[in-house]
Length: 469
Image (cartoon, rainbow, N blue to C red):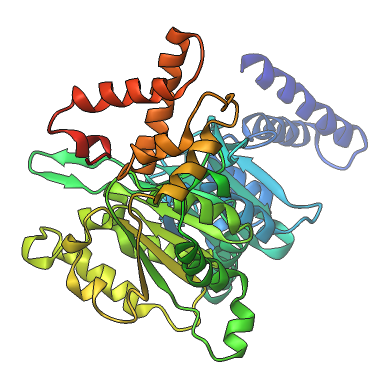
């Protein structure tokens, strides 16, 4: 600092001395004024400011306080969609500038009442999945500035939320841009047309006796696709599923042109292991241009948010698995508010909304009667039970397609598996293969021995294994 003062002092003396030599001013006042000017420059901040508010004012060329601010907050899973929508909203002009910053994000940096005098440190980058097999890396706090448009847009992630701030000349203009960002974030969403699972995050315990519910969490479906030959369905059941699930989505315009409502709720019910989840996954694979939202467990408690997301990403198939766990009869339901929300959402679907609901349950008798018995909420109930002998044979042939079948009497195998569920048949094939390794070849006896071990040693627990005598 001492060297800087000396340099600027000497630089100030030089123009003062020159002015004095030219006779324009007396030497002492001229050189004194020059020296003072040099010292003033020595103390004047040089280059780009270091503090965030100063950086924003510097880049804009006018005070940020001159602009009006509108702020919106969203769930954290929407960060990528909102980041991209903010970047698109600011435009692609050459004078658009980006500021990577890390501030006290609990406060609004763009709010004129907030004194953002902290250093603009670069915030850590974070990896976000944008499809089942693709990720992107973004800074979790970013500001875009368009001085010519008098526009500033900021997005940041903090805790369980994403906040978007827009600063413009007027509140109306800032609100308009906020709406554009919201619309674009859903129109171009990374979840649109994808198969997505919805879970609920763990509750956050704020203090003893008080906790905050977990936020929705979305993850892309990564399991292997389910093909037609992987499931066992009666022809009439398959026709009903095509008519009430696939056609509703794939032939929507044709149906609406004939005045047929495309609002449809389907309930799949039956004992465990009979293919309800597999059937849902198969239907999801068939709907390539539809968003699939699969909700289970605690995620069902946020049914209002799930339906809101389904509407925003329509056309959508909303799958609610094991619905009886949350939507049981009100007399025994400790979550009556969630049950009420579910009925409100089903009633709120318009005739031609592009949202279909597919529910599954192992215990239809536990489902609230106002859901299962009232026309319009559930339009079709389909029972999925243990497959018939012809279907069991087809199912076994599919899972034995890599085996030599000469020594296997499939008719006998199908005969002794009466009442077996699809899940049991798969487990039975795996066990028979284990016996075949010991015997050296696959045969009917391998199936008989495997069945004896699975059943004879499980007295009283057959139904737990998906098998009943």
